[in-house]
Length: 64
Image 1 (tube, helix red, strand yellow):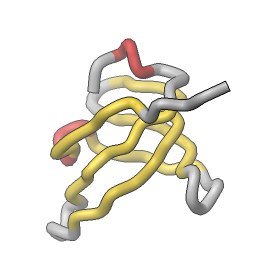
Image 2 (cartoon, rainbow, N blue to C red):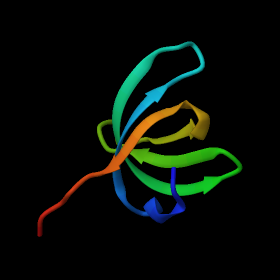
Image 3 (cartoon, rainbow, N blue to C red):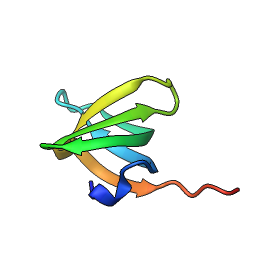
């Protein structure tokens, strides 16, 4: 995930270590050493993702 997404709302397709694929909306808090720390917008809880598990990511368009 590009560092330019820090602080952005992003939708990701993610495959965890067990092979389960999920689609999530997150707000990216930090990206370091292959780890992405973010807030999950659905649950409202902090989550950590391995950058190697990202299958797709794109910014969410918001309107004012």
